[in-house]
Each structure stands twice: as C-alpha cells, then as structure tokens.
Image (cartoon, rainbow, N blue to C red):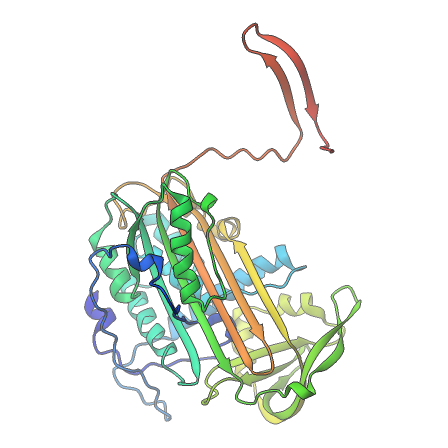
Length: 437
C-alpha cells in the first residue's frame, strides 16, 4: 500500500467541473507553538510528497492515475447527500464539502470490514472498488488539488486522535499517514475540557481561523476512543474581480416572495454561460488558470429552487456540464454573502443505509481489535464571497466510541412523582403533556 500511495504518481486527469463546495486548504497560525504540536507523535516520520502532477493539453497521458471513478463517486455522493440535507433544512442556507466528507469517511472505511465496509462504500458510491486503489487515487488527487494554481490557496489536512493506552492496528496507522498524510496523536479523551481546545486549535490552524472549533467537551464521553478529522481551506481571487464601486443595494426575492434589500456586486464581462428551460448558469473563474470555477445555477422565474433541486441528480449534473457553454458578455449581478454552517450527519447517513457503522454491530477490527462504533459525524463549513474573491473552509469530525452514558431526552409527555424514600410515602405525582413556565 505504501508503494501505491507514494511512488511515481505523475499525471492526473481531472474530468468534469470542480466547484467551490468541494475545495479547501490550510493556513498556519503565527506566534506560539500550537497546543497539538506539544503532544508527542506516534510513529511519525517525515512525509515525502509525490512529484508535481500535470495535465497534458492534448489529453495524452502516461503513467496515469485513473481519477474518473473516484471523482464520479464523490459527485454522486455529494449530490445525494445534499438532497437529503435540503429536505430537512430547506429554510436555511446550506453549504457542505463532499470532498471533506469523502476523505474522512474513506479514511475510516479503510479500517472497516465485512458489512460495515460495504455499507460505508455504498453510501460513498464506491461499492466493489478496491480500498487500496481508492486510497492511492485520493492521495494523488489531494496532491494535485493543492498544486494546481499558484494563485489559488488550497490545502487539505487530516488527523487521527487516539485514546491513550488503547491498541490500534499498525497497518491502518501507516495507511492514514502514507495515503492521507494524517497527523496521528494520542490524547486523553477522559479530560474533555483539555482535549477539546487542543483538537479545535488544530482545526482553527488548518482552516485559516475561519472554523475555530468542530467539537465541544460534551461531544466526548467515557467511551470515546478515537477521533478522525479532515480539514479543508480555500482562498482565491476572482480571475475578473468585481469593483466595490459597482456594488449597490438591490432587492433579493426570498422563498416566500418577500423582498429584502441586499448588496449585489455588478460587472459586465465575458463568462462561460449556459441556459435552458430550467435555469441560467454561469462559471466564475478563480486564480490565473481558470481551472477552478464557481458554478452558479439560477432557477428561472416560475421554476423555483425546489423544482430545480428535484432535477439535480448525478446524471443531469454531468449532462449540464457537457452542454455547450458559450463565452459571451454577461451583465452579472451577484450577492455578496457569508455562510457559516454546521450539521450532525448521523441520522442522515443512517437514512442513506450506513446505520450499521453507528451501532455496536459495526466492524472496525482493522483499526483496533476491541469493538467500537461511530457516535457522531460532525460537519462544519464557512464561505465568504465578496468583490475580491472567495474564502471557504470545511471540517469533518468522526467520533468513535465503545459506549457512553445512556441518552434520555425528555421531549414528550411524561409521568412524574415525588416520594419520600425513607417511608415510601408518595408526596406528589402527575403528568406533563405541555410544559409551561
């Protein structure tokens, strides 16, 4: 596996579009040494990156890594997951990173076996694919994405945090370090007030301070044995920046038909443009090479976002991107905006048939010989779009547990009683069906 991930992976074919929701990178803190850096590394060694990847203009590649299957799988997974989230959260702004989730869950799935591995692979749209091939492809893809354009700041960071004293599979540990360049650390999960700031400090550093935490102390309990984290950060100027002098208030029509004044950035420029009976679409390029673009799909009047998203599936996505995008002058008005988004994905991933991974029946024996399962998959993102460009970040945290406190959420009618336990006398009793203060 070491050879698969590290040796002589040269050119790479990136097929299809790369949208902002699947990009990221990292930034370094200035000043004192980060808290996580003070924790001793476990079997760490210097990582030797593969040589820079390249794309030939005529499409003739040698020694290629076939990225098409894993990129297609990431697209299918991202669109299906987004559809599930939208059904629950359509009243809110939504922003997710399919790549962050793919990297975190594929890193985890390398330690899953049997039905657990098959369930996660099915959700990630990679059933039947060899895990070693997935790992080597993702290793090459991460390297390429971080080197594609000198004017696009993009970096990806992974980490694996382990409970002190527990035994973890050496093959899994080597794989996470070799294929995913993951930082590995032992940490004391029994002291959440100390542990959470250390992990969150790593998160803040790797997301340019845009996401300052992913986990709170209450996310850890006595059963927590491991935490797997992916962090992505992206920052780039537009190839054609907007002028702040042209930004002005303009009515933005909300879903309920109300109008809200909001700053819109304006420019008239040649852009790649496509339209059909369902929407108008435009590609806004970043950096120097225009290799990374922000794709915007505006449902036509009378169509609405709900109807558009009903048509958004992997097949239509690929079809729309293969249609003729004409470079033409476009008078563009685009809202300046910022989104901070957070979601816990246990219920949604269970709905998508990954429930076994969240149950005591989960088989992660290739990570540790002792049984454990996932308790949480937390995903947090940030994006800001303005006249200069875009800054975005994403973090995915997967918490592994061997059990914890029983959960009792009193959120429905109940019976209660006040009793003197010395004599057994019932002093009061009642039911609550509608709480009031």
